View 1 (cartoon, rainbow, N blue to C red):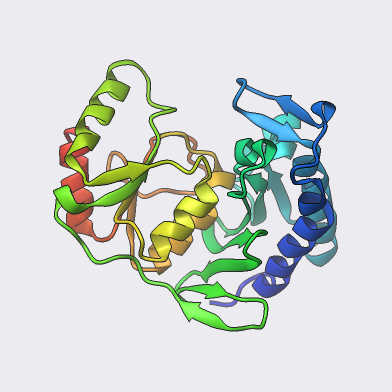
View 2 (view 1 turned 180 degrees about the vertical axis):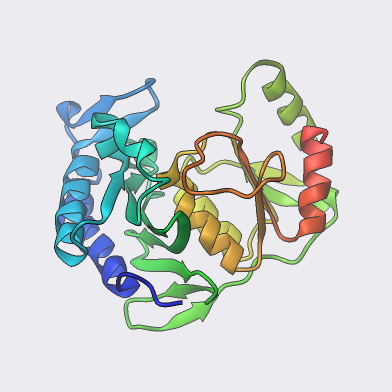
Length: 274
């Protein structure tokens, strides 16, 4: 399909913001440069805000009139989130995904952007500032690892495995009460699970064929739109926990990523009892 903006230019913009505003502050943040939002581990830094301002300014120049939905913009104006469902064209940005890691000096964070056109995610980009490369996808065109020299490597999810041999990504941080206890107990059935505290790298790991599943319960569009498109274009089967499709305006319902539909059904049954 013909996209309403140049995805490679958007990818380069994410890199430019990382080089200008994020990497110079890595492991150099002062106490006044880090603040908590909804809870002590939900952080924002001067780097998040400066990078988002730069990305927004440049997107306004490239695609005037597009709705810009950034994590920090929504923190300042929550009404922006409600405009996503009806927007003709929107760019959804997470200036630093994995802010807790970034603020802690852990080199596992990313810059993410998704393009939403008429209510559908049509492009997704995840840039890794430390590795200086992108994973990206356009709807219907596959998912690729792109290096700075222009080399593009097609991505494909892992081969299916029996439940007891599955490796995946899961965090119980946004499951609560009995549901958390159930999910954690049932995850003992898989071979191994971990959390990077960074959806950007977890989606890269899934789309690159290194794990068989990922589980999320908190749905914010900047965390998941790019990654779910990339994972789907790499051949994965991704649905909300009730089996319904995940759409850009959804902010609840959880997500389960699997290598194929049969693995998704198996995980759904064994982990969530559905």
